[in-house]
Image (tube, rainbow, N blue to C red):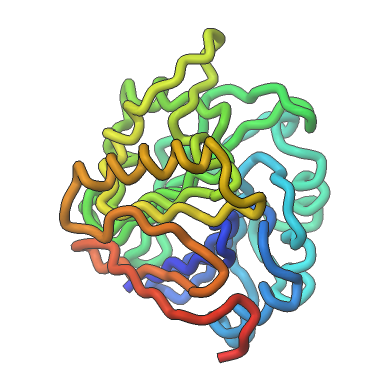
Length: 276
């Protein structure tokens, strides 16, 4: 089975364990929890050893724990990323990867970790931000040959990825049982980078998620949060057979197992930072 562990309540960092035992970490920063709390969670999952692959989401989001802190205890071997010019990644990530092996993927490439399939999805061009020109990417994890079964999509902070562009020729690459959303950017998955600023929920219909994990927002309730809850609750009800909309918080750990048929949700009631 493929394992997908949501490391923090905001869902800004996800750990994938492939069927061959490889460990892949996606996401740059934790939104809630101290370094020790996050490391405790990783030690519980990994016990010891290292992280074989790291996928940077392309955007540096605000948080209290960075991947550099994680790498001190769990060394990172390989940075896995889309083909890039080198100028459309953040300076923070550029420094992090400087002493590590980098493996690049073409947009259509599938990276196999045994029966676990990894696809890194991104727009064809970068976008301007406070960090310069960056290119956000999403992580798609599946198990087995059927892309619609046993799959998870982690969009990260995707404001700027042109979902309309992706939908023109690669809808099946984003079709997923489960959608994991960063609670700090709950509506990013319906935004596009077209010059006119088009906004559409059409990508959610391509994804067709039966389960939606909505990460916690460290800033609490707000109008965007209420709107995202209503939107994703409606979308989840369109595709029965899953767990619907689940809002994450710091009182439980959530992970999924993929076996090629569906994404099986596992939830453990335990406050962040409490040792098992």
